[in-house]
Length: 290
Image: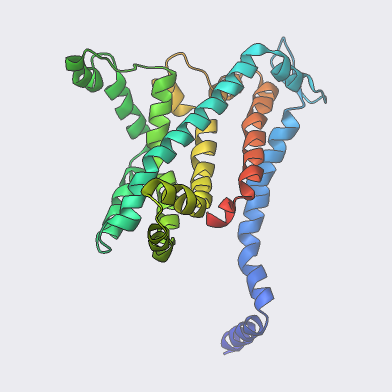
């Protein structure tokens, strides 16, 4: 009886005070965010200013900017950072080009009863393991593999392992993350705008450029947040199909046991780039479209 009375009083208090109810609901996830995510980022930034004993490889907790100076003055690290940035941009552009017609068909052309099935089909690759998909591409791109066999009658051969293979695999892996936001943006596009554009004499390309693209651009930017950030920090696909290609993630992984502070300094590079990218796309309304 006492427990029932206490429960009713607590329920009444929560019902009358929505702010208290909201605070109790958000306390646990916010604590997890602060401790697990922001705490790990803070540890990353702090350790980037430490140094390593050259004889014992032990971490020396003495404040220094030598790691960041090394990143800025060593051409290898600059080249890897630029290569990683170029891969992320290339993957994002490729996914936009491929995703837009697919999303347009699923959102505007396909019959309404078929659209949920098409969305499920788009999501299906996400149900498979990352490693399974990456190793499947390794088999496809191998010398004498299925891709070489298919291109041999045309006198061509597959790209093999290397930077092009990395871009192809990453573009495939993150394509659903670009299709779904564009699909959602096209679904919300008013049909009367397209009809009005056609009534005013605009051709297909002019309608796309002046009506569709500006309306859907926030959704494209929202999808690019996923494709850009996931490609920038990826290192597993590079290990599997990249051959001798090195990106930032690979350098971080290889330096963790040898020089942890330098690896932490390398890890701050994609974090800073992604933060700057988020600030840039924030003006487009992409974050509200996520």
